[in-house]
Amino acid sequence: MWRNIASNALTFLIIGLFLAAGVVVWGARQFRDPGPLAAAICLQVPSGGTMRGVSSDLAGQGAITSGTIFRIGADYADLSGQLKAGSFLVPEGASMEEILGIVTRGGQSTCGTEVVFRVGVNALQAEVRELDPATERFEEVAEFDPASDEALPEEYLSVREAIDTRYRLVVAEGTTSWQIATALNALDVLEGEVAVPDEGILAPGSYPVEPGMQAGGLIAQMEDAQQAILQEAWANRASDLPIQTPEEALVLASIIEKETGIAEERPEVASVFVNRLNSGMRLQTDPTVIYGITEGEGVLGRGLRQSELRAATPYNTYVILGLPPTPIANPGRASIEAATNPAQTDYVFFVADGTGGHAFAETLQEHNENVARWRAIEAEQQSSGE
Image (cartoon, rainbow, N blue to C red; front, top):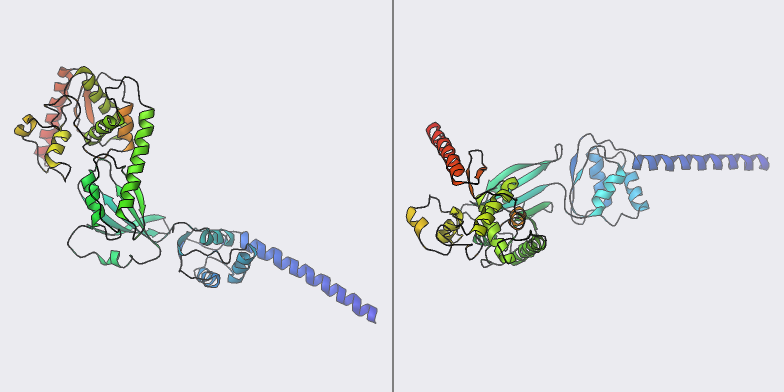
């Protein structure tokens, strides 16, 4: 009898072990296989959150089939204590294993609200944007001027303290140092004030912003970035340029920047100025004259007067030979590279062509024909009210 009992017990033990092994295999498959999420979601993990709370939220949103398996997987991977606060995009069909990696990996939030401060040539603008998980695109919910005396919009005030709100500063190519410094001094997320840096030494681009960071720290980042770009471009410059120093390259690049917003034609615009410098011609470019009037503090807002085009000032390239004494804006990488590696052309003239670009010419006759075409386009636009 005892032999039968022992035999049956062994049988049950073996069956139990097989069942347990089957459960483990099933659980592992559940953890690694694609999940049930039909559409991407934003998962918010609060500061001090727990794996139990996160697993409950995931189960409630239909992202996982079992909170228990999710937590066991986290324990097995030794990640239970690695939960990161933030708002994270969980893609459609993500497995529990993938989701665990998302909420423990750290780094910037990938979902939620983004506030973008844009420093443009004409204005400072802020945008509050929310990520739509379904399209993975940001949708604008508010737009305002941070420097305005008007009350800040509620959409901005309500997200300033949220853990998943990210901030970014975007500086447009061709902005002046005065415009950038004025913008930074107007942002309520930054601490401290900055003086106006030297013209041209700040790199346009996108910079992450942390609430409470020093405005001077952002200026330093832009200076370091521009210095690196300029050094690289100067080291790879073409031979026989009519400029002798990186500083002169920066001046030329700023003029190119203000003359065209089309990256593809910057080397051709650069070639016009290089050819003029090489032949002893005046640069004759309006943006330098305008800078001499405004000193980079905002836009002129009107056309140039004949008296201004004739005035003998350091920035009037209709009067002086060579380059003006300083840059007239902060040029981007494309303009700096064009200044140091211009296209090989015989162009010495260019004028707007009506498409946003320019028509280039080697001779005055060709240029006059291009100017006549542009005047006709201008007249047609004015008559049609464009």
